[in-house]
Amino acid sequence: MSKDILVKSYDRLYAEEKICFAEMPTRFPRHRNEALVKLASSGHRVLEIGCGGGNVLYNLRDRFEEIYGIEISSTRADKLQKAADTCGLNLHILVGNIEEGLDFPDGFFDVILWADVIEHVVDLWSAMTEIKRLLAQGGRFVTCTPNIAECRRRLTLLTGRFPSTAGKDEGLSVRPGELFDGGHLHYFTFSSLSKLYRKYNIEPVEYLGFGNLGRFHNLYPPLLSGAVGISGIKN
Image 1 (cartoon, rainbow, N blue to C red):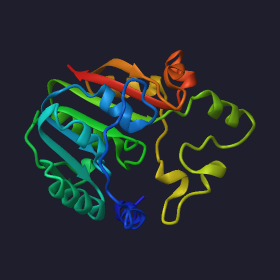
Image 2: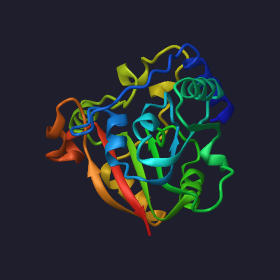
Image 3: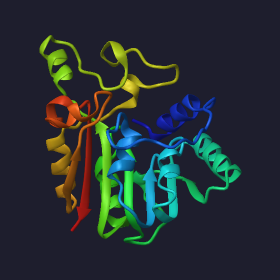
């Protein structure tokens, strides 16, 4: 798939988006952004890949001295930077693609985060290689992504239907300008994402299930959580 097609799709999708910062509860995360904030630690520099509306970075403003975010959509990045400047937030929002490399030195970031991004990247290996390069030794890497092995999706597949993770109607019902199944290209479980971490010398240290039922999703996350949340440390 052409990366230009992805960029144009996201630019159209977020053309009318309004940026709004808000505090997020994190004790029992209900969605990916709350989970990302809960799993993030603290340090000198943090990078969020696919920072979207910026609410994760807003909620990390007291944990880090330097806060960076990258967006593949220039439309969204410009809106977020303007909103941050208006609110007096010291955020550094850049237009970039993790797959193509970023202009930062090796080991520049103490923490790197992405939520619902890994399933969208075209070249997963290039993205992970760059993340490994940018992450400091002992730094923390946090991913949140849909869990294809969640029990309801298993039942959907058992009945002969596609267990979509974004669009309804087996991934065919999406918003105008969106790609099939919300543009999801890769699908993960707690097991497969853990293996991916270790492939790049990042050891998983914390697993988190999340959703509207609070702690229920953590009774057995591989089956009961609709999403995978993993925090790991670079060896």
